[in-house]
View 1 (cartoon, helix red, strand yellow):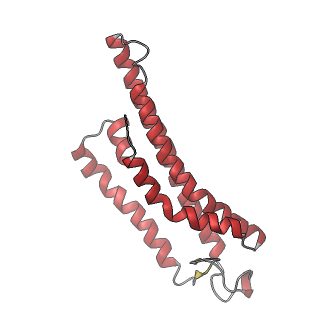
View 2 (spheres, one colour):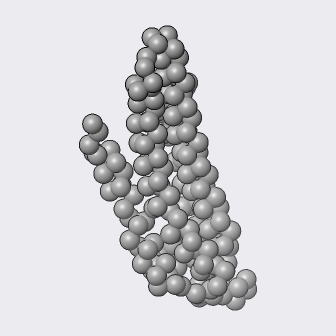
View 3 (cartoon, helix red, strand yellow):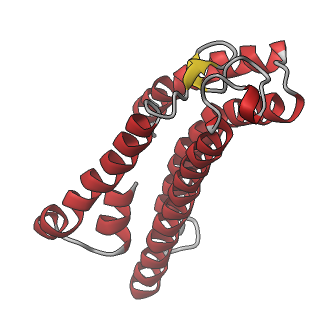
Length: 186
């Protein structure tokens, strides 16, 4: 999304992106991911978290000194979800800003050419639909995972229905993106 924001909204050229933005687009996410992954080892954070091995305290439902492993798991979980949801919010805002830029350009062109009302808004509508589909796929993928984790943290239990929804939708993000990318456009 950041690439398209820079190209469409900000008008950056490919060379400018390659030299100014691309190194940061690789460095920042890789640094955050490696830092969290590596910190999980000395803090013994990787344990059974319900249906997979992830950031969790051990034994299950332990608190503070009663934990033999992963006593800081809650902190790392919230950091993880804060990063995920800030990225989702950034994508949402980025897609919206792209739509607004296309809509603005469309209005300017429409005024210059004095187009009829029927042709106005066609491109921006297509951009809005495509953006909404991609953002919707992100929300659909992550909402059940987040609700499941909140439920686990607040109640100390697992909810079978939430686990099934999480296990169903979480791995489908790439599939949803593929369907959206390949969908017919008329």
